[in-house]
Length: 300
Image (cartoon, rainbow, N blue to C red; front, side):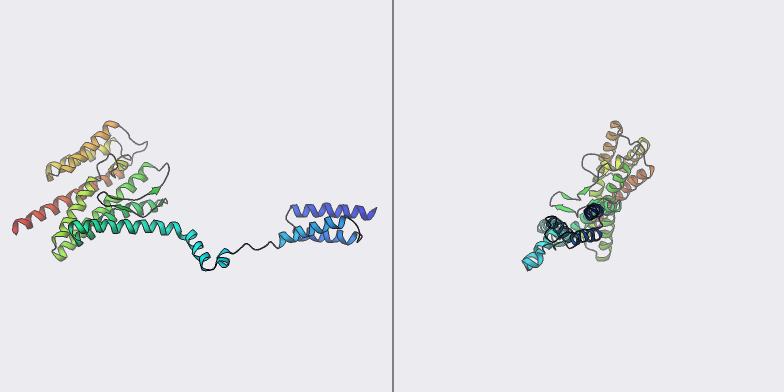
C-alpha cells in the first residue's frame, strides 16, 4: 500500500515538473516509478511511454536541411527566398533606368540622356533619403520614360510636416542636380549641360505647383494661411520680375489651396520658408540658365 502511494505521489510530481518545463527532473521521477513497479506490471508500458515522450522533447529530431538534401538547387532556392525581394526591387530599378536612358539617348543623344537621368535620379533620391531618414520603408526609384520617376514608400497617418519635408526633398536635390549641371557647363563649355541646368530648374519649379500629384501639394498641406499668402506673394513678384509663366501657375495653385482652406491643425512656419526657398532657387536657376543660353546663341 505504501509503495502504491509513493508511485502515485511520484507520478503526480512528475506531471507537475513536466508542466513547468523541468523535463530532466520529471524524467527522473518516471524512472523511479519504473524501478518501483514489478517487471510484469501493466503500468510499466504507460511509464515507458512517458519517458519516451520526455526524451523526444529533450532531443528533438533535427529539421530537414533542404539546402543539403537538394544540393546546389537547395542553395539557389534558399537564396531566392532570402534575397528575392531585394533582387526584384533592384532589378526593376536597373531595368527602368536603362530604359529611361535608352529612350532619351535615341532622341537627344548620349550626354543629354545621361544628364537628364542623373537629374531625375537625384530628385527622386531626395525623396528616398528623406523617407528613410524618417524611418519609413521605401523602394528605389522607378523610372517611366516620358513621365519621369517615382519612389514608392509606405507610411500611414504621417504628420503633414513630415510629409512636406519628404515632398520638398525632391526639389531640393533637383536644384542640386541643376547646379551640378551648370558647374559641368562652366568646366566643359558644352551647351548640353546648360540645357540640363535650365531643365532641372524648370521641372522642379513645375513640381512645386501645390495641386494634383506635384510635390507642392503635400508640402502645401503643412502651411497655414499666413505662409501660403507669403508663397503666393513671392510667386507673383517673381513672375513680374523674371517673366516665367510657371510662377503664375504656382501662384494659382496656392490661391486654390487658400480658397480650399485645408489648413493643418498645427502649421509649421519653417516649412513655409523651405517652400519659398525652393520656388526662388529653382525659378532663378531656370531663368538664369535660359538667359545664359540665349546670350551664347546671340554671340554665335
